[in-house]
Length: 378
Image 1: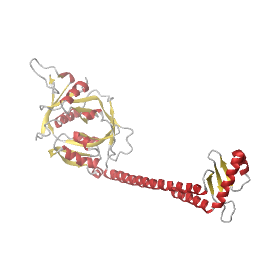
Image 2 (image 1 turned 90 degrees about the vertical axis):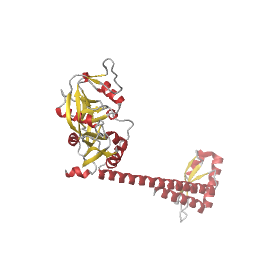
Image 3 (image 1 turned 120 degrees about the vertical axis):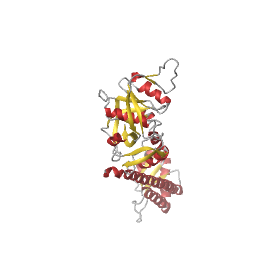
Image 4 (image 1 turned 135 degrees about the vertical axis):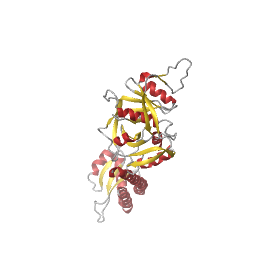
C-alpha cells in the first residue's frame, strides 16, 4: 500500500507540472534570472515575497514551488523544480521516480509473497511438528563427546560408554577409565570395552529448551555425581548393555554373559610370547559375572545439554527416564530402515539414530515414541 501511494503521488506531480506548463516555465525563468543577477543569498530573501515559491536550495540549485489549485490560488501541489532543467525534464523526473517505485514495488511484492509463503510453510511445519511430537532439529557443528562412543544412562544417572571399534576400545580404556570407574565386557570375542563412570553422568536440566514437545525430559551432563559406588542395578544394566552392544545381538541367542572388573585389572601388558591386538586388553584377577542377560533394549527420546537425542538403554531404565520410548529386540530389519522410520516420527536425523541401534533389529512395542498419544493413555 505504501509503494502504491508513492507511485500515485509521483505521477500526480508529474502531470501537475505538465498541466501548469506556462506557470512553471515563468517561475523557472524568473528564478534563474534572479540567481544569475544577484546570487542565491539575495534571491532567497526575495522568495519570501513570492507566494508561488516556498523555499530554495542553493546546493541543489532547486526550489520548492507551489502550483495553482483549481481556482488559480497558490494552494495546489508542492513540487521540486531544478533550475537547470526544462519544464518537461522536471516533470519527467517525477515520472521516472514513479517508475522506480513501481520496480521496487514489484520486487517488494515478490519478496513479501515469498516471505509470507516461507512463513506459512514454517508455521505448518511447526504445527505438524507439535502435533506429531517431533523435536526441533538442532543444527550443530560437532557432537557431544560421549556420542563418539556407544553410550547410555545407568541407574543413579551414571554414564556408561563403550567402544565402537578397536580404536574406540583403546580410547575408552586409556582416556576414560579412571580409578573409581568399572570396566565392563561381554563374554564374547570382539565385544566392546565399556567404562562405567562413577562421577560422570547426568542431572535434570533446570532450564530445558522452550520448544521441547511434551514427554521429552531434559538432562545436563555432570561431572559431580557424589556417590561412593555403583548400585547393583547399575552394574546389572551395564553388563546387559555390554552384551547388547556385542555381536551377541545379531548372533541369534536370547541371552548371554558379561563381567565387570576394576580398572587396575585391565592391561595391555601381555605375558611373554603373547600378542595383544589393537582394541584388545588383558584382564587379570577375579571377575564379577552376570549371567542370563536378556537381549532387549529400549530407545527413548531425551534432551541432553539442549540437544534432542535418541538414547539406547535397558528397557527398564529407558522406561524410568523417558516418557516416550520403544522396545527393541534382535531381528532382521536393517538399522537404516528402523532409523528412517524413527526419524520421521521424532524429527531427528537418520545419521544420529543409526549409531544408537546395535544391529539388525525389530521394534517390539511402542510406548509413545512412534505414536505420542500412546504415552498419554498409559
